[in-house]
Structure formats: C-alpha cells, structure tokens
Image (cartoon, rainbow, N blue to C red; front, side, top):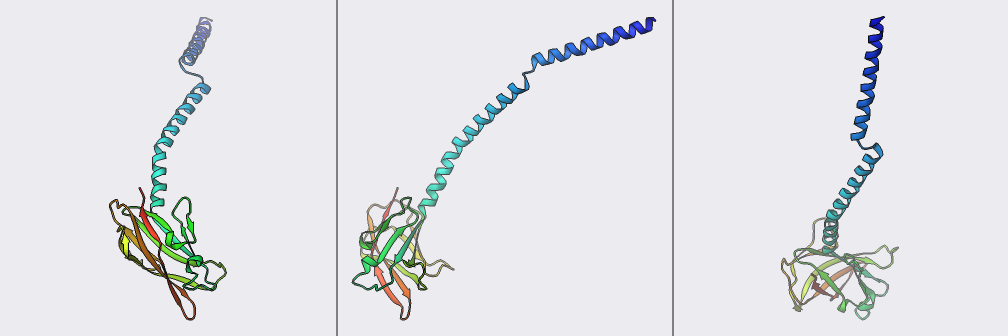
Length: 201
C-alpha cells in the first residue's frame, strides 16, 4: 500500500515538475508568431540592403550596355541616287536610350564613349525587300575635326558590318566621318554619307 502511495506521489511530483518546466520555457520563449514576425522583418531589411547594393550594379550594367553603340542605316532603296541621298538614308542610334533617328545624314550625331566600340550596319527600309545592304567602310573626312576613332575594322563573321574602337581618353569636339555602303543589286550601287561623332561623358 505504501509502495502504491509513494508511486502516485512520485508520478504527481514528476508531472508537476514537467508542467512547471514547460511553463518556464514558454515564458522565456517568444511565441512562434512573434518569432516569425521578427524573422520576416529581418529578411525584409536584408533584402532592402541587398536591393540598395544591387542598384549601382544594375545602373552600371545599363551604362555598360549603353556605351557600346550600334548605328543602323535604314535605306529607302527605291529610286535612290546621289541627288536624293539625304532623304533616302535614315540613321538610327540603336544603343541610345532615346533611339535617336535622323533623315539628314550630314547633321546626324552619335555619342560614343571612351575605350568602347561603335558598330555600323544597314538594312532596306522595305522589310519585304530581297536586297541586302553592306557597310563597306568608315573613314575620317579630311576636315575631320576631333579624332575619336582609334581603330576601324571588320569583325570576322560580320559581313557588311564595320566596327570602330574609340580612344581611351576624353576627346572634346566633333569628328566628321564618312560611311560607305553598297546596295547589293544588279549592278551593285555604292554611296557615301557623312555623319558626325561626339564623345559622351
């Protein structure tokens, strides 16, 4: 009988201690929902910091993409000749955020950036045309002004496209240059237009 009573007391004491321990641990521990809320806040703050750190990287990436410039000559091949050349050649600065367009090649200005590249290509205005157009050469005019281009070349595998490397230093002023392009028809016809370059910041 004594053994049974002792056993019951022991079980009660153990149960009481277990409940007491659980209550104490609950007191010291924050509720799960509160823990979750704090973890969430921490994650948001960390993400905000990561986002702030990422902004310059994103901006730099955009800037880098912008600095390699592409110029596309859109040619109206229908009845093009030396007399109407300015009206038949539309220049487009593809790399420019404003996608600058001009139907006046003599006054068409492209901003380039030091130690970067500029690339010229040409397409017919009529998208259904079977004709192809090649940019054959780029060269400085005699009264070229500022010297921005350092090296002009045709990249392997890029037929009809000419690339120029821009000097790795800030050059003030405008460079006057010529673009030679050929309309591939029978017989082929070659024309020259004279736009301008300027170095951007």
